[in-house]
Length: 481
Ligand code: NAD
Ligand code: ADE
Image (cartoon, rainbow, N blue to C red):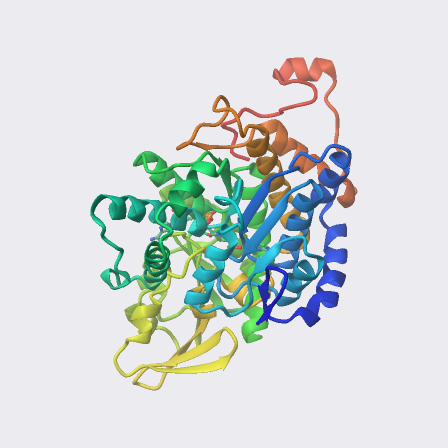
C-alpha cells in the first residue's frame, strides 16, 4: 500500500493512466461538467467537508473532482471491497483532490478501517455532509453512537463475537476500539455535526427508510436513488451495459441460446433481462411482486419459481436487494458449470456461507473474482465476485454517461444539504427527501445535447391544454415513467 498525503491506495504509479481515463470520462459526463461551469464563479460547496463511501471508480473520480471544483474538501473510500479501480484512486491521490482510502480486493477488516478513515477528519468532529452508497457509513455512525450511549450508561463495550455477521463483527470491533481508546463521544459528535447524507442506491434508501420509521435516523437525508434520472437510467441502462460486461470479462461464456435466470424484475432486473435478451438468450424471471411478474410476462419473458428452472438454467443473476435468494441447496442442483452472480448491492442474495460450508465442497479459484465450486458428485458451479456485485467486481461498473446522470443528482443533493445547513425548514433530521422534479428535468436536459437529441417545445396553448407549465415540470410527482 502507498501511504502519503492522507491516502492509502494500491499503486501511485497508476496515476497517469487514471488521469487519461478520467479526462476521457469527463467528455462523457456532460451533467457534471455543466455544473462545474454553472457554478465556477460562486462555488456552492465552498467550505464543505464531504466524506464519501461510493465505489472508487473513474466515474466517481469525476464526481469527486466536480465537488472539489465547487469548493469542497473531500475524504473518500469505496463501498465495496472489490469495486475500486486502482488507477482512479491513484489519479485522485496524486491530484490531492480527495484523501482516498481504497484499493481493489480489500479484506473486510481493511474495508471498515477505510470507512473509519474516510469519516475521521483531522482537527474536527467529522464531515459536514456525507455521500453514501448502500448505507455502510451511515450504519457505522449510528451503531457507534448507540454503543457510546450504552457505554456511558453502564460501561459496557460491544462484543464483536456476539454476532455471526462478518461485516457487523468489523463494525463492532472498530466501535469497541474507539471506546477503549477513550474516544467515547466520537460518533455522537459526528452525527450532531453532520448536515446530512445523500444516498445513492435502492438498498441504502431502504435502510434509511427503516431507520426513519423506527425513529432511529439522526440525519437529514436525500434519496438520490429515486430521482428519475438515477433510478430509471443507472439502475436500468447502467445494468443493461455492465451485466454483460461483467459476465463476459469473467467467463467469456456465449450468452446466446443459454437460459438466463434473472431474480428480481425491478429496475436493475429489467435492465439485466433486456441485455440478456438482446444477446439471444432465453430469459426467465423470478419475482414475488405480481405487477413486476406481469410486466416480465408482457415483455415476453417466462416467469417461473427458482425451483422450476434450477436444473435447466445456465446463468443465474440476483437483482432483488433482498437476502437468501439462491441458497446452497439450490446451487447443488444446478447444471455443471452453471454461472451464479449477483448485481444487487450486498453479498447476501447468494448464500456464500452455505456454499463455503457445504459438506464435501471443493472451491477452486479460477482467476480474480471467478471461483468454481465442485460438489462431491463432481459437478460444479462458477460463482462471480464471491456473490458481491459482479458488474463492479468483474468489470468496471456502469459507463460514464449514465453515471453522469446519477452523479449530477448527487452534486445537486450535496448543494441542497449545504445550502440548508443552518435551517430545519426544508429538510428535517430523521426524514428522507427526494429532490424536486424540476431538478430531475434539469439533469436530463443537460444530457440531451451530447446525444444530438432535439427537444420539442410546448406552445403556450398546448401547455395550457395539458395543464403543465410551458417550461416544466412536465409530469406530476406520481408519474412512473
Ligand atoms: P427494485 O426494488 O426496483 O427491484 C427489486 C425487485 O426484486 C422487486 O421487483 C422485488 O419485488 C423483487 N424481489 C424482492 N424479493 C424477491 C425474491 N425473494 N425473489 C424474487 N424477486 C424478489 O430495486 P432495484 O432498484 O432494481 O435494485 C435492486 C438491487 O440492485 C438493490 O440492492 C440496489 O441497491 C442494487 N443496485 C445495484 C446496481 C449495480 O450497479 N450493481 C445499480 C443500482 C442498484
Ligand atoms: N455503480 C455502478 N457503476 C458505477 C461506477 N462506474 N462508478 C460508481 N458507482 C457505480
